[in-house]
Length: 227
Image (cartoon, rainbow, N blue to C red; front, side, top):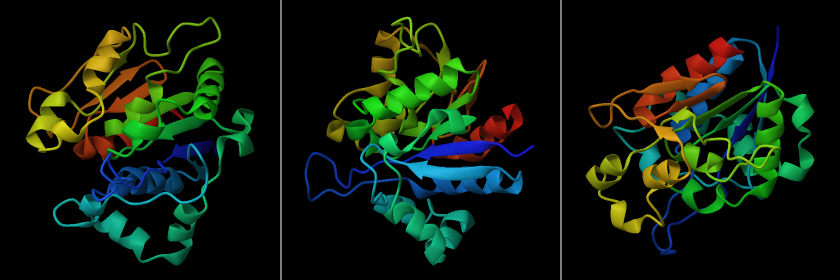
């Protein structure tokens, strides 16, 4: 049976320094999109403000770029989806069975305060839909509260890009906050793989999260299996 899935991408094009570009880590979208497409599901892309979603330059270079990302870049119709994403006020959460937060460092700036995305996430989650996040995408769940006022992540197992991985990637000093610690401070039961940059997927009921770009395929498959 066909399901409807909402992908979330960032509108942010740079770190705090405008000369330092960032954006969507493309493969974190493309793997999931392809996985859900093969299963016959319907998909739409939303961002905190709607409109253009810029791409993280590092995700478009070897060794980070892969066949799915290359195919997306070469397809005008696919690229058009990122040029004109929906805004949260255009989305009726009742139309969707899952929401999937993609990553890239850009999301650290615009996901946490996106109240429209928080509303959609809460409504999908409380209806029993799947909430998924990969890598920095879990920043979109930091401040989402349920109808009873509790944080969605409190007391739930979750993973996402670790502080160790930020340090090893050489970008820790550019980060506006330590996402791993922020999750722990909110009562989330944060888990990470023993080795950095290895695939790790954590499932807690209908909450699914992947730790890093290496976890993208497995995260998408886990979301698809729950659907």
